[in-house]
Image (tube, rainbow, N blue to C red; front, side, top):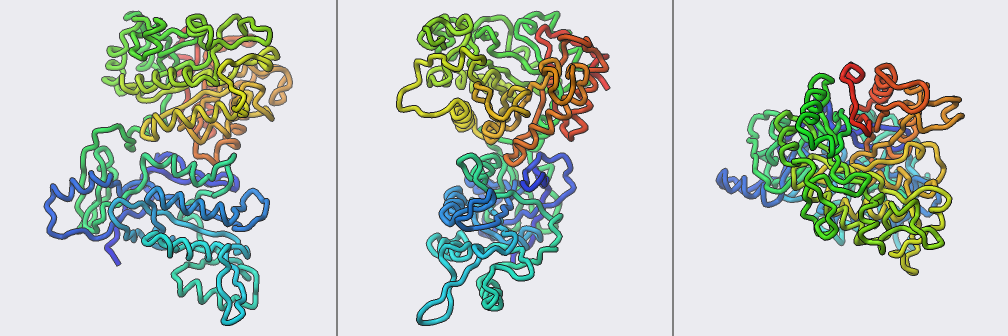
Length: 593
């Protein structure tokens, strides 16, 4: 057995309903294991560092603990078929994971080769499909090859080094077939599985429920989400190897040396995640940021209102870009305008430690629609829909244009990119609108198009950078996509944050039980966030709401209404929010606590 390493976690798992999700670290007091296999004892410090860099070691990273219920052909939401379970194992193997036991995870004893990542499998309830025995004509019973145990044993034999260990939380008579109970328990013990009673203290760790999540395994969604901060071993038992920016989270241990190496490419660090999870700021248009005097007002507001974030428009509702973008379509159409000195503005924010979010308005783009009429969305009679302000969400050209702007924003130095108007146009006329880029072979619905675009965008942006998207506030109570292609649960797996625009003034009589929702800002935001949370919690996506910083209807909005929304957000254990006022008209005394 190797010496133990311990490390502070970057992510704390929280149980919500029957699904369990990861949340960002805000309390580094809990301990997760961190260890590696023994390496060459005569290696020089530089060789050790280079090895850690080569394999991308991060022994303070995240270790996923997955929870399964039934492995069978049952149609229940928490059931995985044998084929689906095999697919989950293949996914882990293909991503360089190996299985470790729950006890090794809890005690901190992780013995895995360099470049590998640990994962833990657990099974609840003791259902028959977890471990079923089949009678042989000649000889004793053998594991059903379609039961979890049979699948694990077979997969392990075909994939050396992957392992087959798992922990079963069993009831009084687990796995059915009571005549074989003692045989099964002996087999599991002999083969290296773990069995715990149902009253085992589950508070020692948190788990991710595996289920079919809109056509994908939730295991796949989670492996994607933690890919930028997963545990990766350096293959040694005498070091704790981490990329730069993680070292302050390491715990001093006798006989263990901290190894830090430099990564050139962008990557997640605890400090960056902490900034994004506590971002509190305001919307600023690029026209406003173009004026030195007005920009200084923004910086003064940040100080006086105790904000730490500025959301700055890159491409707004006009389709114009606030600086001289070098993206091909922006150059070809002349969309870029030298309105604001973007590099200077970002430097001002960086110098003050202010988190910067680039807002890119995607499919509402009147400038591009006029410059490229072939990309314009048209009504069924061929006329420009809504005056010609929408471009085709099916168009790969439109999608790539906005994605290129997002990549450029990161290269400029923005901490995060947020996509807005990532939807189809609304209204009855839009339901029969014409989309030139939609081919006959494309049978996707609008929800699929939006989810696919976010998935595609994330694959380019990668999970090493914070990425978010806005969503209509009404989607927390709507039963469908309202014709615009937005469903929070379909969007959530691909973004760090969803930002509901739950402005109280935008709800009608009867919504949330109020004749005038605008007069109940706390209650509306509270109910909206609870609704959204129930939709996205299983994905690990977090919420960062847009709050109403403007007046629309009665009563007019001032300090009481703004603070009520902020309080509702924070009462839901959400420490990040953005305040919207299209005219960039904010008063510090209306925001500050």
